[in-house]
Length: 632
Image: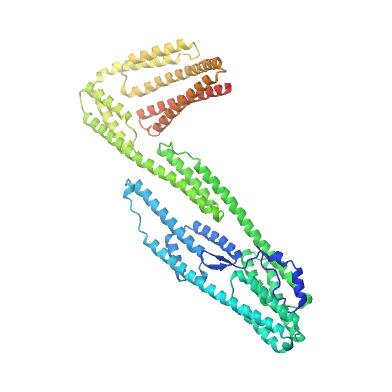
């Protein structure tokens, strides 16, 4: 953006007019606008100042964001603006403060609602704060806006009157220029008219350039067409030269000013002063103007580069914010079934919010749109999380009630001496316990220990009462250990059918063996289960290879028949989906198991084995699908 780059003081010499015509003035200023009207607040402003104001407001907004603007600070600022001189009040600041306050109030309401729901209250019972401070703030902003509008209207009337007065002065100077016989009498009046013109205030932006040019032409007409007293003229030229030299020195110093915004604004003031100073001697007129114009061009160049750099930063920030939005939009939380999974996803969202805060502002057009987009994504996630937590709490409460009932039954039965009947009932209760879902962490261990203590008490009493069978149980323990030893002797590399036959025979033998001592039952069973699982895994590997070979043979037989290949492929994909659902169920259940008890630890290991087996099945299905794809 360029400033007016023509010498405003070329009054008095006819050659000046020719110099101005030869100087590329219009090339420097043809698109310059001294003032524009902002329809939002009714005030006039310089376009460069408006651009700078926009940048400054962006910086203010960034600082405000970093300092976490509060309602109290916004209300205090609104009170200041309501009492402030309307000329110093920015319409953009009023609108931004309104938006910031509404955003803060919305955030506080949503946070309060979330805490209300997390405390177990119903969402429809939540009552929003009446926000009396917000009403006061909006009233204060309206007062400030109305005072600013009234001030703008007054300024328009004043500028219209200034334009009328300046046109009258120009006509008076033209009349003096035509009276060539009374130069000595009219020169003093000519100087008074110039001073009066300069003292008259601003006019409308659309009239500024035109009225100044007409004033310039009138002064040139007076100076060039009349025979002014030479001594008086030379004195005027010297005084004007001294004044312009001071302005030139200051303009050249602005080139090295670090604050480009301050330098640009000061340059505008220097140009206004330059216009008010009359002409200098013809022989140095072009020289001093070229120097002033050159210094102005350097300041304008730095100012333009500053805003180009700002636009580049805004474009970079815009790309970064779009990438964060796309990153968060790609997250799939529809299948999250555990608190741990939701917490992990929450950390991902919070990391994205932290990355967002590290970025500066994008362009004004896109910044609000991108923030609304990102905020909507985050709000959607936290709403889904709140709903999951609410539903899960209901389910946990139901499960807790069921387990409490079982614990009470166990406690009522723990001192029974009807060993057979009571044992069956305890076993039935233990099986029922396994079918009940999880409860919250707060109650999980306590209710389990309560139930376990009742069970352990009964079986300990039973053990003491049936100590006569200890010898038999020890014999059974020895027999089961022998079965485990023989399982270890089976070589999975031998004939598979023979190995399976021996495995099944030993399993049948195990089932025929009676109870072992209570303290040893879990340990010996775990050892037995470990050997059986090792053999099964080893034999399954061979079986999987055999199955894959048979599948390859089957595919080779239908190769060329696309319909059969597609049907087989769809069948495999459906099977894979079923396996994945089963895998998610096991993984979810594992999250609720506790390894603090022997039973819980055993179940956890069993679930882990099943998970690994399902993953192996999925891998084989994937290999089969790839094989079919290679044939299509």
